[in-house]
Image (cartoon, rainbow, N blue to C red; front, top):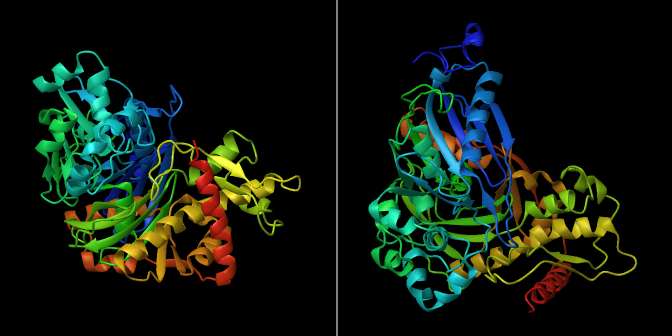
Length: 511
């Protein structure tokens, strides 16, 4: 094939002896490519945002083709910046925003419509009609019936786009979460596959039998022939096919690790043993606790899902999904214009001792765990004449910590075990104020790693282990703690603050 366009001019700089792992981290607001070396260190990365579409209130969409173009862009940018020959990439790991759903034409690879994003609430009415099946879905999938998950999104596509259901029955369409879409594009349509962790978020995958469930497919009216093959997270999902219209990679590179973003962060944080727990502070906030071979059925608002053991085989986990975390800071930045960049928020609130009684509940798209109230809406409460924008910024940061505590307390209750430390990652964990307040609120240690890109790291590490580039036993040495935050708040103050939060949440749920 020769070198893809754009790489020949820098050929003289290549160091051919080195082997690299390419991690593709496809997130809700942007795509990132990170290149790891044989010692588990990031040598180069590139990032590109893409457009968010909001056609109606509560609706969120992405253009799958734009996502693919952003992936191609970041792969090329990372390779060029690192003076790395694409042939030096020996394995690819993929991690992705989960639940976001794409349907495309099998022959042309063209999406039939924009992707429906995990945040989208358009299927709330469908979910309401499915409430009678709540226990069936809960028992088989570990999930609640909510617009968050892929199953009702697929049903919406088939019910609302003319002719789509007939095409689906004839087998001319493919459904996939974003990992499947990227695998399909990287392999030029040779592989229509997904992994256990992403499949476990669709509402149609039985996590007990680890198969697509015929009963659930029938309830939702989804033809089985549109679904991807499900594999272990650590396995060969296909190999790249180099072409002018494809990513700037040569043919033959194996895709050897695929994980949904939160499971990838769990793996990247080294939480592969039962009892270990992490929280990712991204667009949303996601706490995940590894329960090993034990299926823990939550009696509260937690989800039971699939994660990965050290070698990429499925294990169970409990998860609390919070819809709006870092996104509330984006809202303050983009809509209220309180600051130009999110990191400024920490400096702005330096001279503010508290929130002046202000609470902000960021229920912009409803409330996730443990409430699962799709109709709840955001609010700011406790405003007085003395409150200013700094108090609102602090209240937004505190809201991220309060939502985490909601889930954290339920996890302790349902497992019957104390949680003495929480590993953290994601962009917002850079905020020292937030991490200290989180430690105070939870009354436990917070461990922040040196490399906070745990999601990409998890995908890269699993891909490397599967490909034989890393040894599983060496991963612990590659994971280093950067800073530890310890609690320093009285129990009385903790209870007082949290009681105020719970009161504000109840207000957000009022009709």
